[in-house]
Length: 261
Image (cartoon, rainbow, N blue to C red; front, side):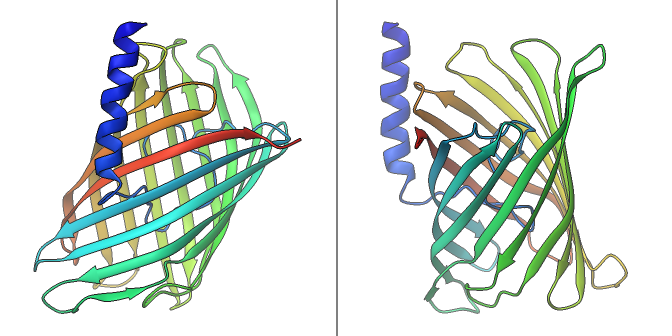
């Protein structure tokens, strides 16, 4: 217990410093829904009559002195045993680079839904859920995004070792089509510490020679401090990009689990 308290105290110090320059953010994937690893969602939903509140902050760096800082807050509500709805509000978005000189504004607002329709099926229990959402263009240089087709798969190999995977097909206001796929593996070394490894792929304008694609990796952990608070931390790096610059992101989240009914 003393080791856990010392580690938790160290995590808190790290996170307080990290708040200055980190964010828990996804590309065109569904916003507003709960997650399991660092970025990848699971089929688990917030229980009925409960809320998850997740403030997040961040810094993304890239070529040409690109520096973007943003802050947002996710609120997800459990409607049924297998259904949740939520919203993620980006209330600050700052970008500075060799091409853009210190532009500040609001971030986007994204709303999402997750519905688990298959649970603990097969010899290695796996579950499936639908995910979908919409992004409202309240940020700088953004447009409407409709994430109409999404699926989440969770497989529990043991009580400690699990895998989550998901994909989303999105239609973007500029008549673009986007696709995002993620897979993540986590292992609870202790009940309060789960190292996480994730891989991410995104594609936009698949029919166009100027189509944008990226493949990246994330290393991090989740730490359930107690029944109310879970800490999430990760570092993401683009390994391959096409028609886009490689970026590095520091990711964090404070997930608060609250009873409202």
